[in-house]
Length: 185
Image (cartoon, one colour):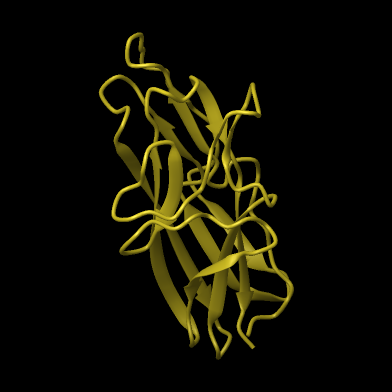
């Protein structure tokens, strides 16, 4: 069980996933860049000795004619530390209950977060630690992605993946992923 208080590291891009896609018939490389720090640190406000560093602070996926239809992946590393005897828990959710990547111009167009196998199906996104992809949960149902049982430092790497095909409207799709840390009671 973890203490209810939590620290939120969300800027608008804590792992905001940006995707640019164009139909296969007419494509161009469209870079999506966000300038943010290389890493973000979050601290449990009730126990300043419990903290985590998340790196990188943003993930950006750029699709073009050679990558449409495949799953692009990027790692995100969480290094946590605590002096609390029972360790710590890092949880993850999106900033709202809408866990889809949403087109920044037309919110009607989305890329849903979904469970998958070793790869994602077309027009979906998710994350995994090992094994199959899982959907990033919405705000009301956060998931513990990293749990320790003793004082000390530990590291976990999540792999985020996005797969789009040529049927998806071109544009930038985004969401904010929120990480929280709390020492275990």
